[in-house]
Image (cartoon, rainbow, N blue to C red):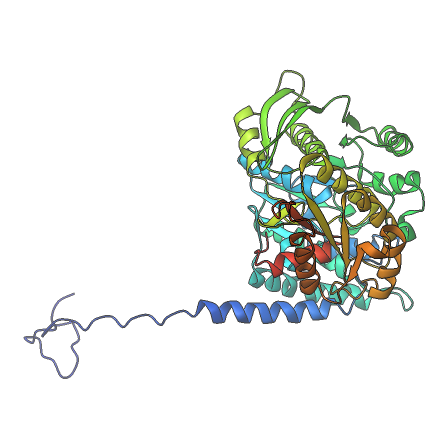
Length: 491
C-alpha cells in the first residue's frame, strides 16, 4: 500500500512517529479463583444429585431394558462406539474392574470404567484415564442427556416407571466414554445382569466374579437363580471368563455359554493362582494366565480373594487381546499394572497406631472373605469392629462371619436412608456376640473413637498396648463415610 492510500488517525500526520515511546505493559490477566470455580461445580453437582434422587433409587429395578434402550437410541447408541468388557457377580466386581482397567491402561489403551456404588462422591463411578471425571464434566454430561431423558419420560406408560437414577447414570457413562473417546470400556453391572441397565452393551468379554446370595428380592433366593440372572451378560460369540463358583452356579453359567455359543475360560482350569506369599503391604503372586505363567507379580492388596480377582482380571485382559497358548501379555507390563492397583475401601489402612482398616463388605460372602484375610494375614493383639449396615441385607449373616476374629463390636448407623436402626442392630449383635462384647454409638465418628479406645486399653499391665486394630465395615456407605472422616480423597 502506498502512503497516498494509507489512512492515519486525525491527530497524526504522515511524518509523525507512530511509536512515541514504549508501549504500556499488557494488563495482568485476572486471577482465576480456582476454589470458587470448584465450589460452584460442587453446588451444581449437588443440584443434579438432588434431581436424580427424586427418581427410583438404585436398590429398585424393573425387569425391562426398554427405557434405557430408548434413551441410548436417542443419544446415538454411544455404547456401540467402543469395545466393552462387562463385569457381573456378587462380590469382587469393583476390585476386578479396577485391575482390568490398570492392565489395559498399562497396555497403552485409553480406558473408561463405570462402577457402582460409589464410596464418597458419585463422580467416582465414571472414570476416564484412571481418574474420576470432574464435577463440571459430570454436570455437563447430565445436561447433555437431560433433554432426551425428558423425551423418554414423556412416552412412559401411565402406570410405568420413569427412567431410574441408575439408568440415567449408565447413559451418562456411555456418553462420556464416547465423547472422550475411550478405546475400551470396563463396565460393572449395578444389580444382577440380564435386566441391569448396563446390559444394553454387548461385551466381547463377559467376566463373572464369585456368585453368592444377595439382593434376593430381585434376583431370587437361591444361588442358581442369581447365577441365571447374572449370566445374562454373556452374549453370543463372547468370551466368558468365570471365577471359581459353587457347583450350582457354575452349572447355570456353563449352560448359558452353550446356549449363546460363547467361549469359556474358568478359574482353576484355564487360569488361576498358582502361588501366593504374604508380603509387606500385600502379596506376591504366581499366576497362570491363558497365555502362560506370570511370575513375581506383586499385588498391594490383602487376601486370597484379591489374588483370585487378580487372576480373573489377567485372564479377562488376555481374552480381550486374544492371548492364548504361548501368546502372553508382556510380563513387565503386567507386573507394573498390578503394583499400581488401587482399591479404596477394600481392607484399606487409614491409620497406623492403632491400625484402622476400612472394608466395604456388605453381605455374608464378603464378610467371610474379610474375616479369613484378617485371620491369615494380620496379627492383631485385639481387634474391635465398627459395623454399620443397611437394613435390607443379611445382617445376622454378616455379624456371624465377623464374630470369630473380632473381640468387641461397636454398632452404629451410617447416613443412608436404608440404614438399619441402631436398636435393631444392637439386638442382632447381642445375639451373635453376647451383651458384654457389644457397644453402640449413634454416629460413625464417635463409634470409631470408641473402638480405638477399646483396643488401646488393657487391664493386664503385662499386656503390650501395641498391636490393636479397628475394622470399619458392614456397608459401602459406612466405608465411604469412614474414608471421608480420615481425610481420604475419592479415587
